[in-house]
Length: 118
Image (cartoon, rainbow, N blue to C red):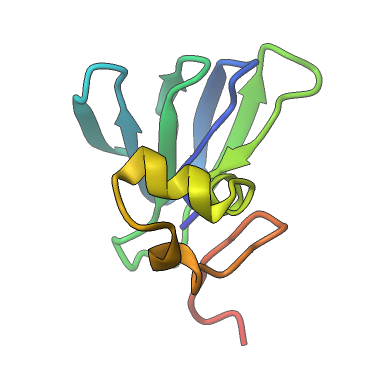
């Protein structure tokens, strides 16, 4: 699984080379689109939409080629994005006491989640 993320400056086209993957895209009005696609199929994510890919099908993995309409697409993941805000800002955004976020791990890199990688 690749963590939920966005590319604010680039749309993304994904082509499944091998296996089957499931992708989830979060729309700007709260809608969620979830689809499973297989070898030879494509899906597009508009610039600025949060999305993620996963392989829940236990088919030996899926291989996806991703293409962007910007030669230097930005990547903003949820973990890294939340880590970039102060506890006071997070408290204000989520209507919580800022101390609630004091145990939030501060991650400075993207997160790639995989099983069986040893």
